[in-house]
Amino acid sequence: HWTPKNEINLIEKGKFYGNLMGYHKDLTEANITSPMIWMHNDFDRSPAEQLWVNSDKWGGLGGQLINLSYGTGHVYVIMEEKVNGRAQGGVVRIPDFDFPTGVMRGRFHPSDGQLYACGLFGWAGNKTRPGGFYRLKHTGKPVHIPIAINALKDGVSLTFMHELDPETAADPESYLVKRWNYKRTRNYGSRDYKADGSQGRDIAKVSNVKMSKDKKSIFLKIADMKPTMQMQIEYKIDTADGEYLSHRIQNTIHAIGNNGPFAKK
Image (cartoon, rainbow, N blue to C red; front, side, top):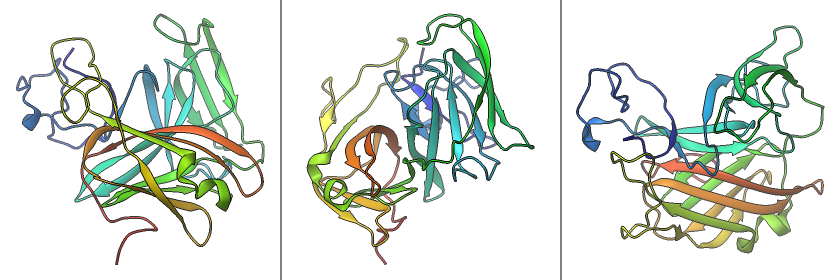
């Protein structure tokens, strides 16, 4: 209650994030620090632990923040940017695998640099094996996911780990972008609300796509860019080595910035 959707917080001392089990009772939006990222329950119904990839043997993701999910048994990469000192960003699932139970805790082993995770199933989860202890090992193949997201005045940029196919990645029809907001009430969760206050999700049309010279970053031109609690970016594109990608990102925009490879100087 009073928490509209799942959230990932970047905790700073002295700020209130809406935990009513504490002593802070002021529930006005002005006194609650919004999370770095909101996530709809159809994306991750129950986030568990976040941890840093403190390994250089895990597919080039060293230094990234990841999210383990009890609700889905997935692992997500968290992409953070700061605008005017405030953290925001997006989340994308590491594709092509599922843990058979909800994962709750994980650590990178200092000897082999791989992720070891454990979890269980109690209730309200997609993965129902009673429990397990797992290793998620990098196979040596390229990891084709974005590792950075930036909200700009006239669109959003995504930076991938490897080169993309110019034909499909530069086609506006390869993308579907939606955005919506939530309401903080005494109810459990929140419905989705368009910018005009009606229920539903707004379509944010991608009118043009630019690609960086190294073919690893793309810029999605979107009219009427503005802060939004929830944006969702779906893409169906190919990589330069011919792998088909069909992924979904959920991100939060608190403020429009000027960061990343398409920042204007």
